[in-house]
Image: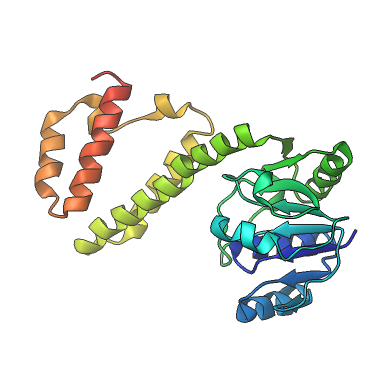
Length: 250
């Protein structure tokens, strides 16, 4: 099967790396960022192009959501299967006369961070049973956790991921702003962060909640509010505590 990856960002990089590790041949990587494409050529020995798109059996579009429809128009082969990697868009966003699908890996990707691809859940969708089997087979070569999911379910999977990953990471970034402002090494908090994440592998998140809000400790809550001088930090602190109180009806 001839595979072409469209994109040069984090998801495209990791898909190329995962395919390379499993010795799944990739015919070409197509994109606009030649510096990033050269890096993937050097790392994975996959040819690239910024102009000519090779003829392939499967095109995997791994670009920002806003760019998917536009880049999908560059694929003119009517015999191809084209899949995007977005969690928040239907396969119908693809604009062409080819067969349409989605190939969504549920993970946060950064080029600088190694991943265990076998642990990543992959959600696949296609109209044709043969195409679905093809995508399941491909994903199964990378991951031990492959599922079929239509768009109606997938968009809620992506929404949950934003709460569980993107929002949490933003809180880490805000927490580091506070520790930096007081010259407190952020490394002090890494064991706490690690334990918080590890704990929900064994305990329901709702049952694992600790802290002054779930205890309704007004003295500590007021003390913290008085310490916060950054308006954005104070807004987040109050909003999060109100949400915790509502969940536990305090």
